[in-house]
Image (cartoon, rainbow, N blue to C red; front, side):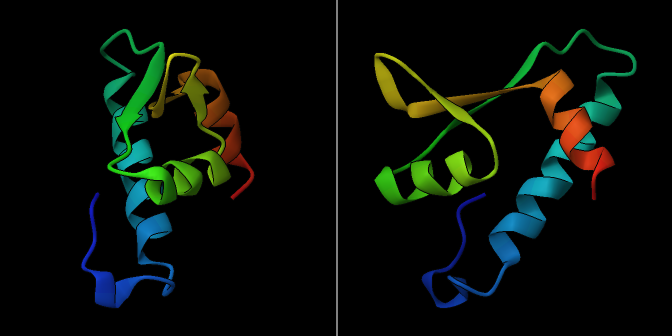
Amino acid sequence: LARDVRMRGKGFGEVLAVDAIRRILGAAETLAVLAIIVDAKDERAAAFYEGLGFAPFPRRPNRLFLLASSAGRGLEKM
């Protein structure tokens, strides 16, 4: 989901992330999906994902996860 730096702050990253989460949850209807895992390219990206509800792995702060059940509840609120 890396974006062009010229697009920062315009809300496209969140739109892309929500679309990706929706697609993953759609696949979860036929596949076993426990969590969504992302590898943030830097601390700024990690902070972005944390703002979406992802939590960092203790020993790898730039690898974050979001339980599929939490993602589904979050999308229901949108």
